[in-house]
Amino acid sequence: MPYQVTWYTEPQIILYDYNGVLTLDEVNQSNIEALELMNQASEPVDFLVDLRYVERITFNISEMLAVQSLHAMITHPLNHWTAYYDKRSSLAQLLMHVLHESVQGRSRFFDSQAEALEFLQTIQD
Figure 1 (spheres, helix red, strand yellow):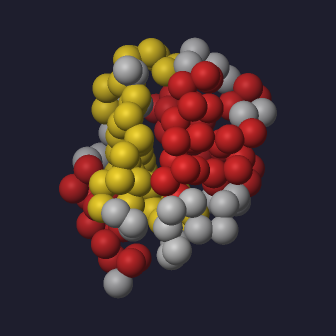
Figure 2 (figure 1 turned 135 degrees about the vertical axis):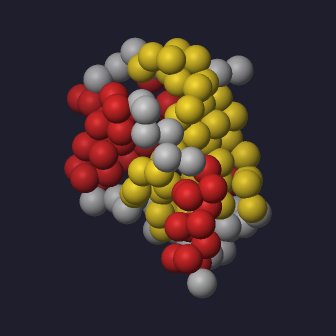
């Protein structure tokens, strides 16, 4: 499977772990899975998105913005912050930045998972 969506820390942080060639169908399916997890929560949920092993993205921003599950996930009332990590993936950074700006989501990019987790911990306290 080119991605995995799981609780990192239930019910506070959901981890998206992407690898290989990332397709629009995988983005859609991973967000459906994240929505199912988020709907189990009663308090705001943060997201860790691991982009370290993404080799290629097969879609553009317009196609990504049309994915209903992505819009539903980002605008979900329990969606709090999204922390992406792996700054070497500039295309992924650009896509995620434009996406979050277009729906006014809250996101930040980090070099490592440790930095991303530290940030999410400080905003949860």
